[in-house]
Image 1 (cartoon, rainbow, N blue to C red):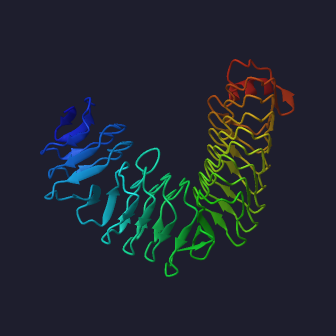
Image 2: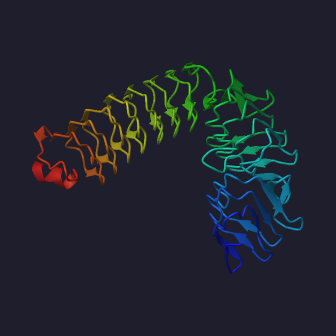
Image 3: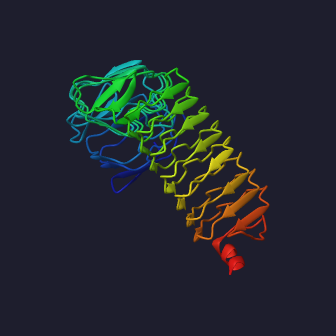
Amino acid sequence: MGLTIINGILEDYLYEEDETDIVIPDGVTEIGKNAFTEFESIGSIFIPASVTRIGEYAFYRCDGLQSITVAPDNPCFSSVDGVLFDKSRKTLILYPIARQDTDYRIPDSVEIIADNAFAFSEGGCLELQKVIIPDSVKYIGDHAFEICDELRDVFIPKNVEHIGYNAFAGNDNMTAITVSEDNPFFSSADGVLYDKDKKTLKQYPAGKADSIFTVPDGVMSIGDGAFSYCKNLKSVVVPESVTSIGAGAFNCCFYLESIRLPKRLTKLGKGAFSNCHKLQSIVLPDGLTCIEDHTFKDCKSLRSFTIPKGITKIGAYALDCCWGLTHIVIPDGVTSIGDMAFWQCQSLKSIILPQSIKSIGSKAFVNCFELKKLICGGKEIPFDNSSEISIELIQKHLT
């Protein structure tokens, strides 16, 4: 068996042909970070009593994994029907990605569903259609059920007090998230998950059939990843009550064509509209002061884009691969443009920069093959399209 073990730590696994069942030898005290990452042929793993620690991403992308068994006398971990728990069975650590069950009832002892528990791969559990979360659960971790494509509607019981980032994102067949009326932290309306007083929209189910959605008036915040991977949405109307849109809020809404942002918006998180391939235009309100990293990355159809006067910073990869952009006017007040901010904007023909600019990141305008005109402070700056546009180049021609 191709296991690399150093000082009791299982650091790596070297694939051996036709080996599907892994038995970790007694004496190993730790399964190291990424030890079995991307070994899709592994079907089962046995963890001995000596293992007291499992490193981060130890079983990541083990897409053939169907069962994890733990020695009964292990002091830190346990297993039930091939599912990995801590010893007390209060934390569900990992549901093997390739289990054949279509239904799963989480044991009543569980209080914590760990980060990535049902989604420890690029996609989630392959067969799981229904999961029953018991009243004992208080915490649902980040990405816990992300991209479990077959997972249907889910019910959040009364004692859940934390639902992590993208916990239910990208589930193509999930049309509704319903919450117990007795839950003091969360609520739902028309299958959409909110906090209790409906001031924050937490998660819009990716499988909802509607192509148009109007965020209810009174919502003040759209949470991180709230609409990510929604496959049917083409248009979203955001009311004037919203002041904050979180990181990755509309990430991978591949068919989103239009969205109306409120004038009161003051925060637009990192990657908020990344990979919105069909988005053609967007109007940013004057209250924003920063275009964060990755905000419009890979918005390939974006053609109409105006940077408001209040912006002082454009982050890294902010408009990377926005192939439809032809002209950019960066207003006075912007002092910083991040690394690769406009990288591969292949149709970009002209840029107007303000005199306020103090820094331009690495490769900010690289692979803008059609770029012919660069103006700063009303003065055209000569440049070689094969080289980088830098702050040194700008300052050289302005002084």
